Length: 190
Image (cartoon, rainbow, N blue to C red; front, side, top):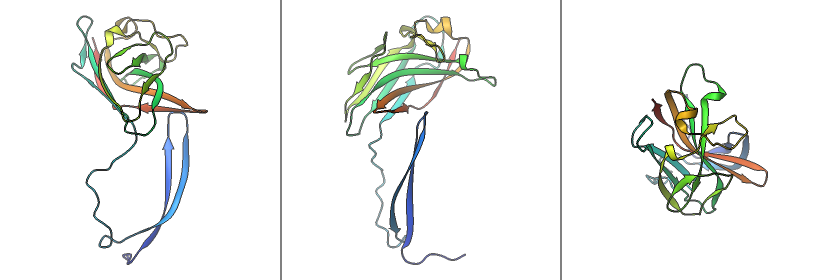
């Protein structure tokens, strides 16, 4: 095995994927330096990509008291995020079917996250950060494969079991639909 001495040439290929498609963009050819020639790297990498985060106060969910989910949207980019926001629940089982997937549309505003009773985009301005709490029992839920707007109570539509939950915002620019997705947390319906 031989070690490279001096600069090495490389090409950059950027692959961007969303739920609907993947695109590849080739970058320019650059020159890499050997470790001794490379400048010191910064410890933290700054990114302009939006970041979505969900967390729950209580992962065991039963009908009754409030079931609070915290949703965070960090838009450190230079453009506004405009799209339909929804909490998604997908049943964790060995035999998953499309009927085991549910969604509850949200309207994210500066100080609150509320049930969206019609298709209305949420807007998170460039540089804005939201941290909002929502009670999932106050939302209207529907099956992900359903054609009608969600209108049911969570415990009327979902069966007992463990679910993965995440926040998703679907944006549309020109003819491209992009899905921004948060981390997943596990919750149990009882």
